[in-house]
Amino acid sequence: MKLFYKAGACALAPHIVLAELNMAYELEAVDLATKACTSGDFRKINPKGSVPALLMDNGEILTEAAVICQYLAEQDIDSTLMPKIGTIDRYRTIEWLNFIATEIHKGIGPFFGLDRMMKNAEGKEEYKASALEILKAKLGFVSEKLGTNKYLLGDTFTVADAYLFTCLGWGKFIGLDVNAWTNISDYQKRISERPGVQRALKEEGLI
Ligand SMILES: N[C@@H](CCC(=O)N[C@@H](CS)C(=O)NCC(=O)O)C(=O)O
Image (cartoon, rainbow, N blue to C red; front, side):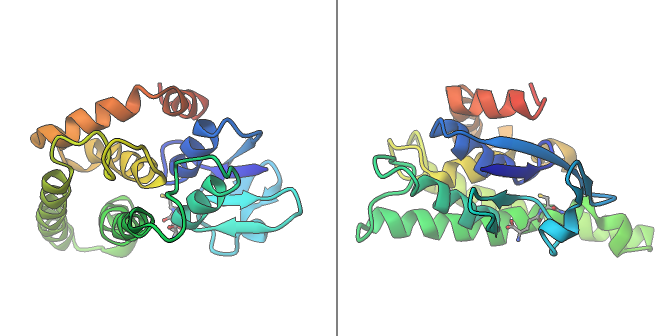
């Protein structure tokens, strides 16, 4: 299996899952500005032009971070990264994945492409200020739900934690101080110390 990624971007979530499961995998970096990668034009691999993309051993390509994470977790039937089918915890995990993808990931994503989206300097500042307030409200909700639990689902680390941890890492680039919420900063630290997470961070050159 090969994961196409950009260091620190959302592909870190499935990368963490691969490392946590100790699966055999290769990595290939993508230049998101030029869409170039060692294999050539990345758009021929993923026409959406975005990472992550997972090249499976049978040649299939799977995209969308939340979906790749679920797929990978289910390659190992003993894994607890995705709770078992039929349990409420499974739907809680999917509920978190959806929230993280649509509210947190896509709440932060536009900050990185603002120069391409808006020409008006004042408009950009206005957007950033209000988008930051919206994000803060969402993280306030996360902090409240998390409480002093180790992970989003309680004591068990799941794919939703791999995804949320990835997005929290972007806060420092957009003026969002996640240390404002003790529950979240403790959570971030706890996850960063997991061996699988350490391995993925090292492989992306982030530590
Ligand atoms: N819907 C996709 C979005 C992925 C995404 O936004 N990837 C970003 C990096 S975090 C990216 O590749 N941006 C460059 C682009 O889309 O051109 C997913 O959830 O995986």
